[in-house]
Length: 414
Image 1: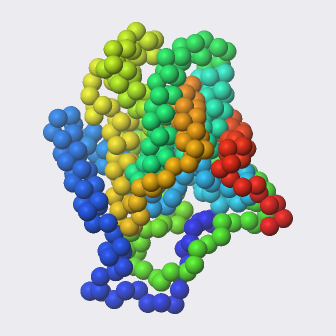
Image 2: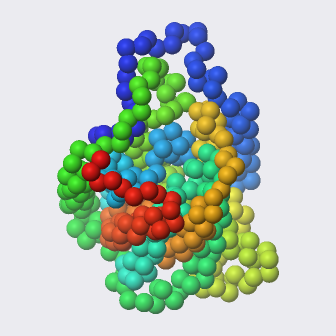
Image 3: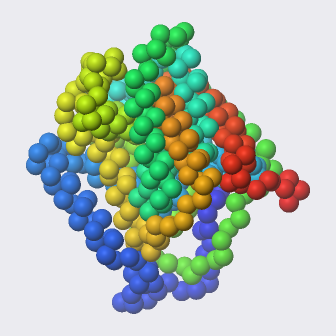
């Protein structure tokens, strides 16, 4: 699998044992120490006040944040490069992640492993998912990130992404107020391929479709790959793991592994955006809003989450872990440097993109992680519907970036 990042080896010898590698000198030791202290303190607090299980999930979130940052594994950039420049590396890596995660999930969700039970990410397929995924896709490009991408770039110190995250939360909160109306529109209910045909045929069918998609994007790309950076001296494996950068295939393996760990520990797949709506609802309630009267927050898990600390919510905990894990990774890489300048078009696109991301995620029952990755890895039809309409939204979003003068026109002949 093509990595899309520089993974070139050279004839240089690795740093001799006993010599301090360059990574230590480049690392922002103060920020790294602060991130480690915060991770340890929160993990201990959660273990003491809530449960060891929740503390483990927080640390899994930190592992996801480190992996996302070091592998620069975002859906938004990969899809934009494919749409604009026909570069297939990023989207090919995403297809590999879908395939590997499904291969890990299907036997568990199909009941093939005694003693292990977990819930699939299933959601009704209808107008809500179609509209929500399309809006989310536009928001990905205007906001500059997806669900996971927004979190790990915030952890890396990107000020513009803080604005995207703030309006992501606003959009998710408004979406939770409107969701009952969208759910009343036509839908065919939940469709599980595992329940319909069994996990083995369902997995074989999904792998066949993913392989076909991989061949299609490779053909469209016609060999165009992201240009590799200049070669760097060979380094020990531990040094590359700790300080980065990672090739994309390392990110695929790490994200699939941590997603499996989430499924086994939490009992459900990794998700991100429920927490944003929860944070917004709590803020609105603190300002005097009657959130508990909204249908979405009046019953079931949302009502329980609204009444408890955010540290008792698995999604919130893992999101905090992702941000701190990315902060640690950025500090170790010596790349934590919040930018100070924000142009008008960046501000406008962050606000609009964040609102579309949050509102779309709530309507579509999740983002590229909670709906696309978790849905397809669970054998749910809604994950595939999200994929199709989310990609169409990205196409519109890429042209929206052009209108806001954020991207230059693509020279097809180059």
